[in-house]
Length: 161
Image: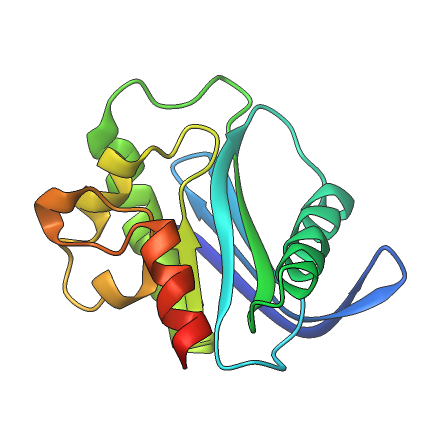
């Protein structure tokens, strides 16, 4: 990882966001926006895009907060974008290393984050990331192979609390 930038109470789209973590991994910029920190946990997907903006990231993170509120699920929203202008890495090994490194930085700043599958980050990749020490509790939508919590089971767990 060559660069890391952590910003708190950052304004995106005219709205204050609790946290923005930006890292760079061999030319791939990865950013996670945490919309709010009002609940114990925040959840959102990780996706690969060829191009993206901070405004798009903020819109997606806020949308996750709104989805959770509409569903009466006590979670705040987050979103993670890996911007890969030359296309996403072909092998899952590079994807796994990228997400593991970035996740560690985000978790250090906010222990309530939970990353889930999205465009380019299928369950199989997340399940590999879950094998890294300390990351399993911060991932959902995993394959049964790692005894992970599927998104549905995780939401049921949250609702029972």
